[in-house]
Length: 181
Ligand SMILES: Cc1cc2nc3c(=O)[nH]c(=O)nc-3n(C[C@H](O)[C@H](O)[C@H](O)COP(=O)(O)O)c2cc1C
Image (cartoon, rainbow, N blue to C red; front, top):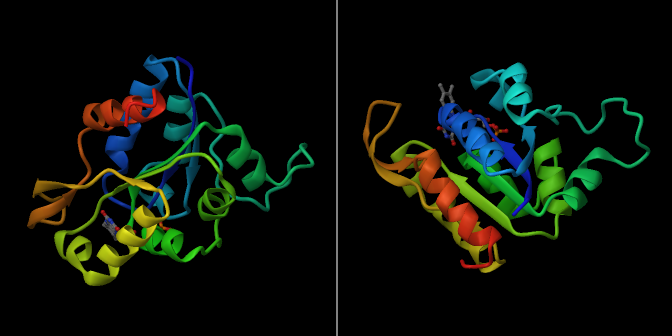
């Protein structure tokens, strides 16, 4: 089954896990276009996303391009699934409130396909009522939230906030793509 995925990546330490997720998707025969926030590129460079996904990385809706269609609309209409993994607290909040101030949030807002978010952050950030309310608001509007896991976090604390392992994310995404979840 060939699936076109717009994979949003954000400024979270778990970006390194999303690299493996791209590889798993590619192995599955899925086509992946990475939409990176500027902060995501502080964690993993453009060249890594581009090489692993075998596509240009989309970061700037205002960059010159040959296609007349705005990039965020074209990407939103191209994909079968819009996945954000890892989804930072910041991007989760923007999506919950309909902000559209970068390529990822613009495309997500314009997308009518399933939106799947995998939040990853410090445990206190995840537990914060503001973040919880944002996740609940998105769920109520039909977004799928792949909940973060408990364990040791990169920031040095233990708690809930870890991005699930790429294989677990892939299993969940496969089920969604096949209409089983
Ligand atoms: C070292 C470091 C690690 C960070 N890790 C996370 C994280 O795992 N999750 C998160 O929500 N924010 C994290 N942040 C904060 C985000 O990078 C920050 O909120 C940023 O504005 C997110 O931007 P974006 O959502 O546009 O990518 C981290 C910041 C730093 C400096």
